[in-house]
Image (cartoon, rainbow, N blue to C red; front, side):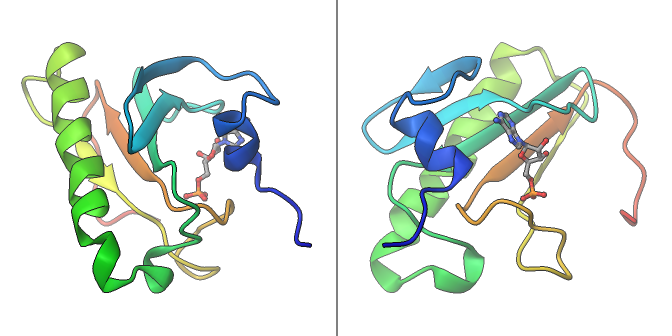
Length: 114
Ligand code: AMP
């Protein structure tokens, strides 16, 4: 059996996280190493390793992650914009193999990212 990812362990409440939102499809918690004053990770409860593993049946849940990102941005007062991104694979900068949307805001974000 493959080892649980750190995010699956957060879902299973085996390790602590600062959870800010949860529902039947997803969980949102503060990033341990925030890149701005607001940095939240929104993850599906379903174990989808990356964008590269999204199946047709996952379309709705992936859209839901972005809807929740929008709601949390509103809740956090990010009225001047923010960034909602998903890193994919090694060259995409993904370090945890459980799909996650980074929702980052509270400062001017540069583009392109490094
Ligand atoms: P990525 O590099 O796109 O896979 O993003 C992984 C993110 O997870 C990074 O921003 C890390 O800071 C964050 N992270 C790793 N472990 C934890 C944890 N235990 N609790 C909260 N965030 C974490």
